[in-house]
Length: 312
Image (cartoon, rainbow, N blue to C red; front, side):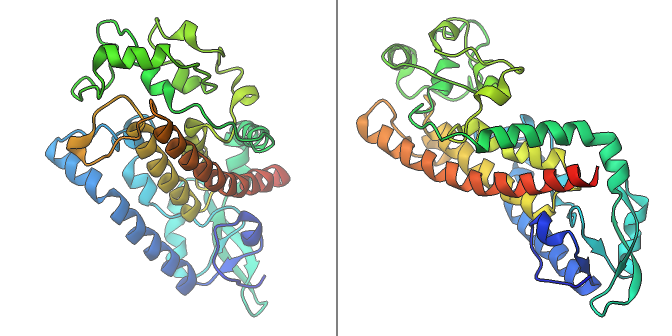
């Protein structure tokens, strides 16, 4: 096996034996990147300060900051050097016979692929099937983020998720926006938070069982969920790819809330006024860009799923 340029691609790593200097540099770069991304959240958490936009990435998604910071080389990568042996005390790592850059037989440390597939093979197969189905569809744009509006439409007691944040147009103005638009939300994990009054207004009836039939690459929530699928497949997914998906989810969440009915000026967010033609155009342009970024990450995640399927 020969050592190539470090990359997050599972296909490129399929025969990658990584010398200690190479993988330790990647690990340090990963730590620095994640520390910068998490600094604000960790500071607010220590101070007990809530954030209506960024907290979502740590409450709705279950991956803890410490887990995000942990770097993994991914399936097919073999870590060389004495420091690699520290990983043998962790789940999913085992000794792997390989060859160094000079072709000499060596023993390194890598993913225990057989054990991982035995425990998570069905999950990996589901994720691969879902990602492939979404990748095979065109991106449907123009939902304008109305799912967030439907979550506060004629709410009952306790229905408003961010009750401490004011509505930009007030309750009546918010209801008017919902009533003057056609809502076509295809993502179950958004639809399930609609108020009872809003649910009949949705043209679709997404369920968990129909997720693979309805998810599509233009959906903001399906794009954010790439982060969920990435960490659910860790440590088979390289750490760099998990963070790439986290960064995309972070950016998408910002648009999701800027286009929502909430007034987030106190948090430094300018609204995307989707009730106007200009706001709709701004939303669609951002949605298209996120769909393109998501498509590239989805393809990389599918490489991991394919590698696991081949190994299984």
